[in-house]
Amino acid sequence: MSTDLYDLKVKNKISDRMLQEAEHYMRIALTLAKQGEGHTSPNPMVGCVVVKDGRIIGEGYHERYGEYHAERNALTHLKEDATGADLYVTLEPCCHYGKTPPCTEIILERGIARVFVSCMDPNPKVAGKGLQILKDHGVEVYTGILEDECYRLNEVFFHYITGKMPFVAVKYAMTLDGKIAAYTGDSRWVSGEESRRHTHMLRKRYTGIMVGIGTVLADDPLLNCRVEKGVDPVRIVCDSNLRIPLDSQIVKTAKEIPTIVAYVEDGTERVGKALDEMESAGITCLPVLGEHRKKDVGAGIRNAEKEIHLDLHDLLSKLGARGIDGILVEGGGTLNAALFEQKLVNRVYAYIAPKIIGGRNSRTPIEGTGIEKMSDAVKLEESEIIKLGEDICVTGLVAE
Image 1 (cartoon, rainbow, N blue to C red):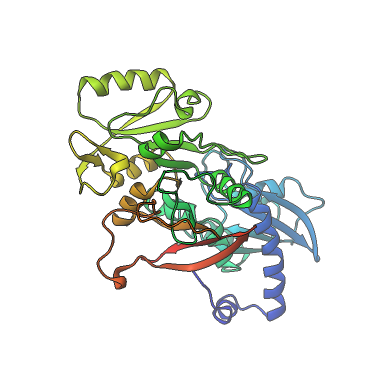
Image 2 (spheres, rainbow, N blue to C red; image 1 turned 90 degrees about the vertical axis):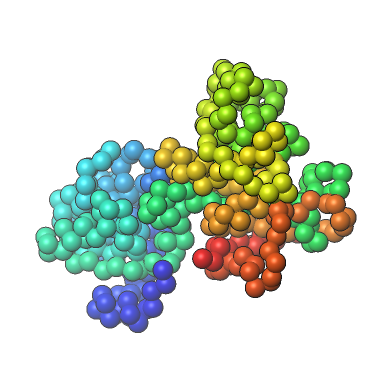
């Protein structure tokens, strides 16, 4: 998504000073946009700033799904008349009626003279139409301002809106020698407090959180979001044979936190009885196609009797149809391996603690069969290193 500044200036025919001003106000708009994190899905996070005579006279952001968009929020809370003002917005203004009126409408009503946009909206209902309407009514339009930053902020939205498949981020914490647990299975705690807090910030960012049944049986996690103004993600458990214990934390809190248990429907009495128990507890049971897989892959999501596993592509497709646009995977090495093998992972968050535990039988974050040649290794691009106390987090997009 990178836009060369020289090409940007030529395309928009703007001066260095004008570009600097545009970037300054767009950074403010991006900061505003981030305030909607956890509340706008499946819509994007969008921020807007209105400037007149070098002064900000209006600010707004998309605060919650179904409510006013950033532009309308900014333009309905103006400090003064906006006629002739500039508007800076991180995503192309919408031009269609949905849950709210089109933003192009109020931009024209308020007499905005120039509109600066970071990213174009790939939604087919918009996709350039919003800016064309503004241009047709005499508004000057400039695009590509801090495009990379906007795209990164809304990478989940851009991925989901174009294919209706959730953006999948795999997260794990490991020691310096690549272990996620000791040979005894003990894993509390691999990472430090700051890393765990960072994880909860991710839980706020993603609509869903996914684990395999093996993780539930081993750790009995709650999988909620424990930060100020946090938003609990939809919990998704891959449990092909419906083995989740009724006394697990997930089942006991299913009426308070939305929970989906995905299983392979086989029509047996066991599944029928388990479905009744799960649904009575408030769990949504989601039947998914099954697929045969090697024994040493997917143990945590395997139907042990039939050696049939959840078809993860089918699962993600069905979750996407339910409006789940992004999923944070906090499973073990089995589920992670299956997702990587099927090329379903978009981003990785690897927390690395300065500890060494050793052990040939200690668990690793990606199990399965593994690759045959180093040249076939999964590679990350646009990688970033975040320092979190004594730990570091390496994150990056999975290269296509």
